[in-house]
Image (cartoon, rainbow, N blue to C red; front, side, top):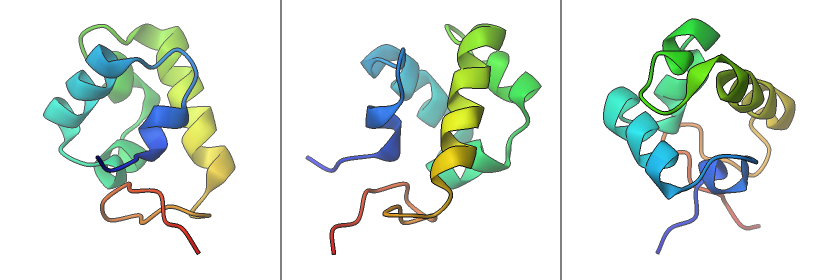
Length: 74
């Protein structure tokens, strides 16, 4: 099983991760989306969209393949 940066975001369980990936298709697309777009995903809402956006902004591109969202190991 591949690890994703989404696995590390607080309050983001499997159902929410699946909803985000179904809507956006990739972590790269989620990164490009605005908070309002993320919040419009079923099960997310504005508070969790803020958590997601802040987390993705905070980690930048460290340890993450920005195309796939997979966590890279050095």
